[in-house]
Length: 252
Image: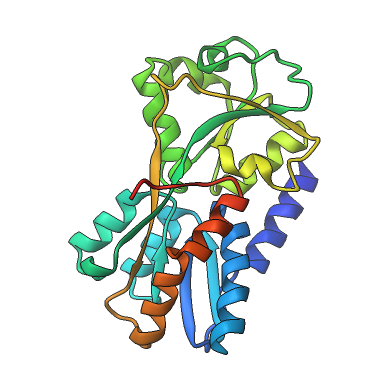
């Protein structure tokens, strides 16, 4: 577990915001891979400097609520954007639905606990990790779908850790610290997961699919550039990058 905490601390340091850029973007931590590719492309095309702070959807929402400088908000679920809209923190006309977020069960390679579906997460002795329901979008969704399946109270005794970000859930499984977790399926294509985990699809009738949106913040200090970046992540080029990382574009 010590190794896990070291990796987590490195991730926190690496993703800390750096002020003074042309644009500041707050993004869900699980979107890091496609976002980094789009950031680099946009910087080259526009000669601008983009800083991206990656954190749980709850964290970045809280940062916007606290008035921290943010030009574009891209959380891991639409709920956070809609809540920001209700509070006047994002511009309604700039909201773009980007891609779908599909929950799945991730297990260590070889599936030693023989997990076949949601019901097995409640089996005695199974070690489970779940995103904190008050932090990453996957935590809120995990609690909802387990509650929907009437499994939440039965799974709770098996939960060994409530992770603050979805990225950490991937680490726990890849290092065989737990037997199973509920994670966004697109993360299973990351290099950190290759050869280390297996994926168990959740029955579509029990699953809850979320949408990832983007929006320009009302307090942006560089609205013209923010609009350009907001449009870019929703453009054909941007969507092709999302698809490369396992995301499914929303139907137009």
